[in-house]
Length: 188
Image (cartoon, rainbow, N blue to C red; front, side, top):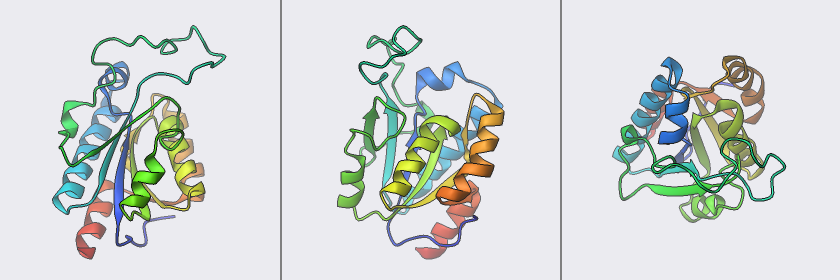
């Protein structure tokens, strides 16, 4: 479903645009998603709307995938730092997670509700992982979900296209960064 409306209090939630992940998957689609996510963040800030930047700091403890890359608590220095292009501001809300969804054990829902947010615009990496899991949780929590499809990427192009084409229309509305910015600008 395409974007039809912007709620009075939307928030931007950017998933896992951090040094370790972006560097590991640097390609044209990742570069474009970082640029578009940064543009969305700048526009939300300009309009005084909440920007939530999420990073992942490891896997959940006790996972059966122990021994796989990223499964230890020891990450290289700077791995979980958000990419410079996001230009983190003191007004941004930072959430660290250890699971795919940014809602699981993080306080994100409480933060958004305290801010009066009813709609979230999602961007980030990986479309079929962290973004999709967060979109599912946001939908389950009752938020109006908007997925900025050109502000996300996935190391697996087929998985990205599946999420965008088949999963996201069931969870919320999809739009480009330009469409989101235009519609938010028209409501302010």
